[in-house]
Image (tube, rainbow, N blue to C red; front, side, top):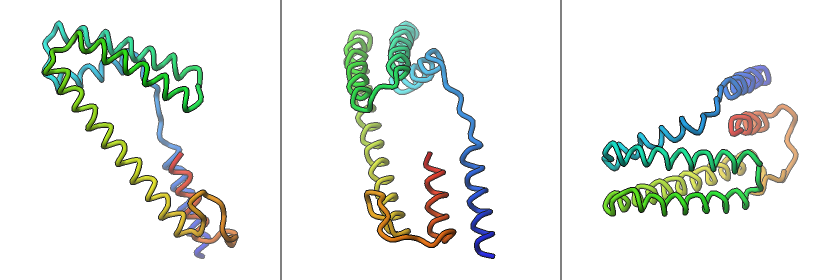
Length: 162
């Protein structure tokens, strides 16, 4: 009975995880989104917002071309850093000093928030690994019974993480 309930729960979780449709945004849509954010946060006027949109469009196109080649993780990171440095240099010329400092503070806060979220995910993953009896490096410490609750929980969690 418990095996049937666990199988249904796993099937339901898998269906929910895979039913999410993702449509890739165009460079123009991404540029508009980031420009709208910057207009709201930095109170940009119309001429500055047009320049910022053009800059964000170029940056979005550069990122699209960077990730279209499917680079290695380290190469992608280096490419992104180079794009961000060029963007910041151009933004210094477009924004006032006060606006650029505010933009820089907002970016720092976002980076810190992402770092904390990444750390929380890492801790959550370790707790789950400990609960189901696998090591932190995802090697099985002991064999599990086929169809056990721990195994189904782990599989459901892995499917939802994709």
